Image (cartoon, rainbow, N blue to C red; front, side, top):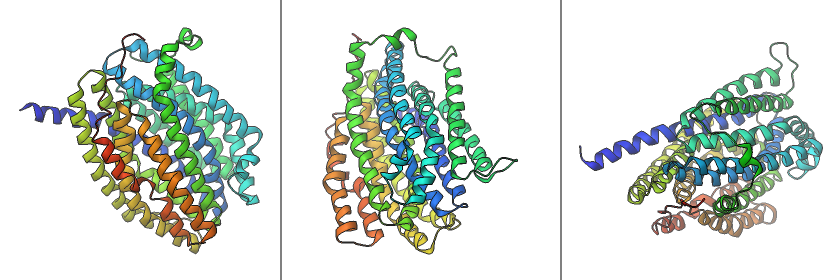
Length: 453
């Protein structure tokens, strides 16, 4: 067997080891939202829409925690390739400090002023009431989720994606069971509706945190060092923010843009909001494959770059990019095949159902661009420390083009809901030429590790 065949075999072996568990983990995480909405769909349409808007708060929090996790992932993947465990542990401690701080802020705001937060997204009094109650109950889960994310990202960067996925998937199964119990009042429990979904989130995330903390005390795991938690290493801090800042900037630009998408759709009526909520779940579920390939492939490329195998990393990056195209086509096909029959069972008005069917067709096109951008930009580019590109591209496409055009279409020209939704779904597609041009520069083929940390 020649070297190329051996390398290809190793590529697919590692991709199965990393990408498939991460894809499963992403899918199972998205399944929580899908399960919440499916069950709440049997309660009433306002519950679906209100909880969807309430979870925008946790979405905004995830922009921060995802930035910290993303920056840590970039560094830890390369230093794992270099087998520098000391630096990885110090980065881990640094991220835990930031995660606790930002999660506590969001948790306190959700507990003490949930009505104000809900009024940022909707003027509907009933949706504000349902959403505020949900946020107040769910508030502790923000801290639990932020901390457990630190441990899960560390596991993935150290090649333990299967363990990370097993823990997350088990928690999702528990979450879905408890959802049914508390939402519908099974097994003698009171019927809590949307409040039951919030309580379930607190219980499941608390258990997930307990499991990952317990696992960190195994011999082959890393855990926070109190010495490193209390002492700031300036060199590590600078290295961390060198990559995390642009990921955070990207997440803020993108996240605020997505929030504006919800605001625009939310002001087009409850039917449009409900349909968009369900379409968002479909989007989250179908992007799990490309996110698995992007995250897992990024770790693979990062490990090679940290080990100094630059040409091998370049070659594997090319294979991942080509794979993302196929993934986008397959994901779009899945949406068209299984989306309409499954969601025809939900309790939606005829108008909302018509919107949803149109949105699913638009999502099939969106998935082609999403798959490529997730794999190439957030996976391959970030693996080599090239974290600046996406912040600039998202700023231009979302805020310079999509949001102004969608706002004009919705509020000035008063175009149909599906036309507005189509505009809002084209951000990933229109930047593909720019992504390809930047990829061919190979700026991302770079070893960012240092010996003086």
